[in-house]
Length: 544
Picture 1: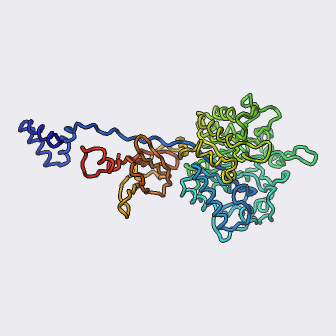
Picture 2 (picture 1 turned 90 degrees about the horizontal axis):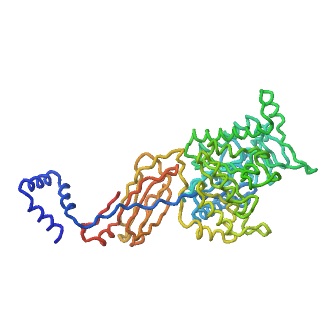
Picture 3 (picture 1 turned 90 degrees about the vertical axis):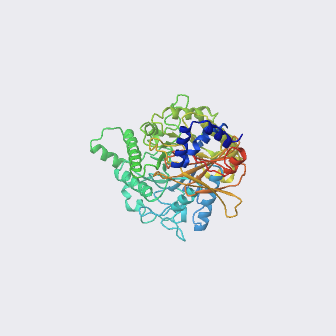
């Protein structure tokens, strides 16, 4: 007996009064006529289709411009050569299923972007102050191309270094060593801004905020250079940083801290100001710091000794304080040591850093991928990096890594570019959300199906709803019990469903804060018809 017969039989058994009520309801609202049919249908109803949550892991890579470590490969390349190299970097990052590129844009109080505050970097064009020709803006280009591939682009700044020994060109007239020489100190082979001068703090914040305000970057990043690493004179004696003038100003103003504590507080003040300034301007722009991997020797007890390098005392970097005060969105301590290295063990240090994370910020350690395959006794096998990533993935409290640097991934040094997608980056991953910034989910998108121009392929289309800006789309397809996940850029709003076995599709939006919304789930019509002879022979689109 079919459904129509079931309904008719039940309808006729009703009393006249009840039959009249049903007929009246059908005349007033034809939709309500469907209700008796649904009640009479004894076939099992499909359960709600819930796609799995995508993986969450920060997969970043540093792209260093200082001394042309990663990009450009050498100074003075043509515009087309520079762009081609950058495209190769971004394509490789996307292929390896990375999701963030950290591009160095200010190595020495210079700029790899259009700036009215600082000169063009010589690492870009070979001559400080010389723009690329034909003209283009490398940072604007990098941001646009990264976003096309669904990659975050973090702008990496050095806050204090004003010259590098690898710099060879004539200093440009608008470099700070020329415009404000009183703020710049010669220290060994370097020029360095004096962190004790308030004018230096103001200047550094101004430079970084200029980029935040003018470019659609996803993060601001600074590394381990605060006060400089110690230099020695010809007699092998450590040179003290020449900040006597700013130190005397502090004392004359009534300051009572020790010189070491004063230096640390100078850096602390800059960190706090940067975080507050970024959040006031664009709260979705993450602020990340990558300090030396050990806060102080002896923390934890099994790490280091009195002779080990002490960034707290030498660089005046109180990185634990920044983390515990929540003056950053992610901390990436440079854990550049092997897992089995007793004095600086990777998992021991990782565990200590996560135990200090009282504000629940992101911990994304830096790993020394460039150590792979070097022709020396200190060379690492590629598996060491894979094991370190697996250690992070299995550690509660840390959800990502940053590779230093891009070059070994481009060169596939030691086979690392083959191992990463095979062993640890099987599936694409979303950058972990930052709920302390914003935790508002985006609305469910509108989804539709259509045939392509040939009439043989199905096109899935979607569009945003609501007021939340969309940063990424998560598009998931289901065959049997298996789901496949793709993460697509916000500018993409359709895809072909080439596999005729796809049964269901789910589309959800992700915000700039990493918050994923509810999925709109589509049951593919041809699958519905194939699976049930109870359903209507007319293909239906069910979007939840």
